[in-house]
Image 1 (cartoon, chains in turn purple, blue):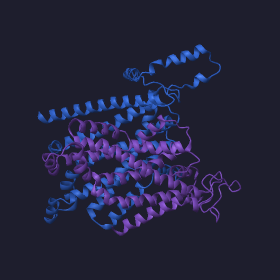
Image 2 (cartoon, chains in turn brown, purple):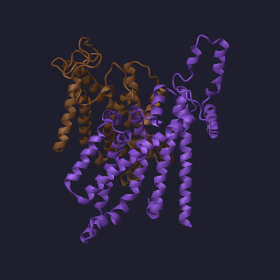
Image 3 (spheres, chains in turn red, orange):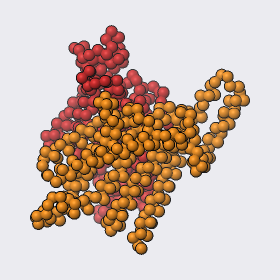
Image 4 (cartoon, helix red, strand yellow):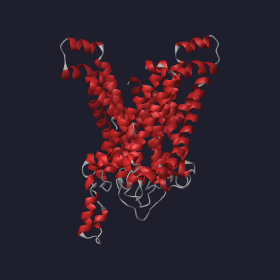
Length: 268
Length: 296
């Protein structure tokens, strides 16, 4: 592991730890309104100032980071499992199933990602409680984000199906699920891990996009999307530069993920 | 002629696949729309001035939409005759909405795409031709930074900085083009015959034009097809947040107001454009280099 990757790993771990410690670092919580100080600049009491309704921006940033950073991996897990089921199994079985799976995957990939997201999000109720909106947002990401991973997995599983050691195992009498679990799945693991890690930053960015467009996590729950939405009212950067802190944090975390991923992608 | 025959066969196959995928995509969208919560609800029924008979008439007007297949067949029949239905939220025919909005998206996404390709190609080719670490670092850092920023934030930044919307689309698409084309060029430059050409004293521009581009070119054309889809996706946040009345803004408005008939039409339209762009890239690759394309 080179220095840049070590540093990226430390950054992601520190940000995760800080967001998990939100209850202690920002005991006021993300909903408490300081009505006497709406839109206040940074101070000793409010490190990043307060928003228009007097809520502490630092607390909202910590809780929002927690939601985005914890639920994006959960969505990535859902999408990787689906990709393994659709792409991995179809690649292993081959024939008509592989062609069908690839056709289905192509259909999913023929629509721009953001377009697919907002179209499916619009099919579900928009006026829901904040907790339900979090679940819907990340569940949609997980359920729709499998197609690209499934394509990669189907190609890898197809190559494994025709590899010498699988043919030899087959000739030795190993078939079906046992052959898949003993010989194919362990060799698909690196691809599965890579697809899982690749999906996390994609889902973080997608949630941010949905949130800014008003189709993500609803108020008062904070997420990176809803925090970045506050930039909408910004007239110039000089006016309130502290409002750019969520964007800076997002860029730092995304850069760290990019640095962490470079090797995983090569392995895949 | 066999080449013309193969080309025609390729075109027919692509058109067949596009038609099948669009029909299937439309059916899936119609199914999802039909199953979506609140599909059956009509706010007009809440109007206290309507009597029971009027409410029943409103119910009956939507009776054909209950069965998914008949709903979809009815939609297709209307589409063949140029009737794509009426937008619930905007109260206008979908066809006229698409006709009004499409040119804006073509202009904004087209300009953005052009700018992104110019910027990415200039950086990628410069890095390959001059082979200085500074160019490599510059390209990687700039593209990496833009990859880390959500498309909607780039759109917001363009509003704050008073920049045109196509510039935001350009910066959303640019990192994807740069990263992929840089990697393609690097792979092509690593081939042994490039080393041999260099050893023979061939100039860098000639190596690029005669030996590198023929290798990397087909995949770059395929990338061009994919970038159309990326630009269309980027047009949603850019048009919505920059106030540009295009297809992207229409999709966003349809999503916010749960205008499901409009969403189905937009889904079919965007799928069609994306598939046409990808198929066009594939056919162009074949026309430029039929032997390699056949081998692939």
